[in-house]
Amino acid sequence: MEPQNLALAVLGWILGDGPRAERLLDLTGLTPDLLRERLGDPGVLAAVLEFLINHEPDLVRASDELQITPQQIVAAHESLSR
Picture 1 (cartoon, rainbow, N blue to C red):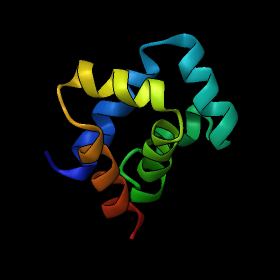
Picture 2 (picture 1 turned 60 degrees about the vertical axis):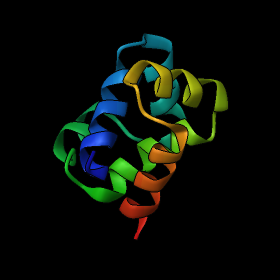
Picture 3 (picture 1 turned 45 degrees about the horizontal axis):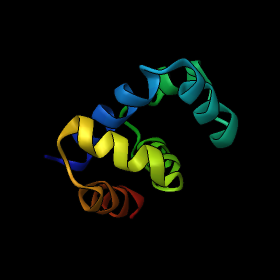
Picture 4 (picture 1 turned 90 degrees about the vertical axis):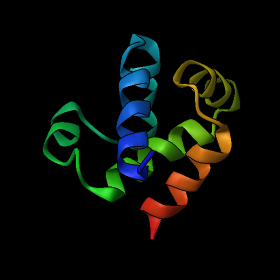
């Protein structure tokens, strides 16, 4: 899966849970408007992945539910952070 597509899948997963979505916004400083406006921005997508990587329980849960490995998420983050 391409890094951008993986990040968008992760974002969808995060936004599917209200408290998790609120935590994303609180910890990253992103806003719903900014997410909509810059959805294709590698920096924004990298921030979404970093948020997930920094909370191992959610990283493992997202990996399981999205049928990807945590390593794929880390690799996508590294790719988008360049």
